[in-house]
Image (cartoon, rainbow, N blue to C red; front, side):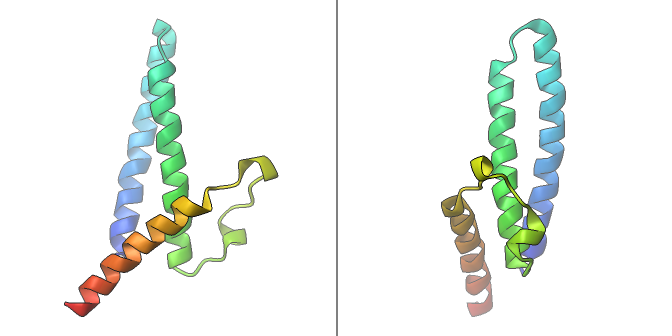
Length: 96
């Protein structure tokens, strides 16, 4: 099943985010951090949505995954696209 694949992708993305945080700190010292900050924010957003999709595919209810504030809701379209992508991969593998 592709659930372990998603988990390994999340692990590698988490490590990349950690490295980006270090990079942002280094760039802040030099005074040119905006590009690395933007890249970090995009990576964190993508990780969040993929993590929510992964948990929901495993059957975890949304209220156990996160409880965001009203002004910080995740994008449901992105989450659904991620879930649809991995479900299509699962179906293809089962059909083969």
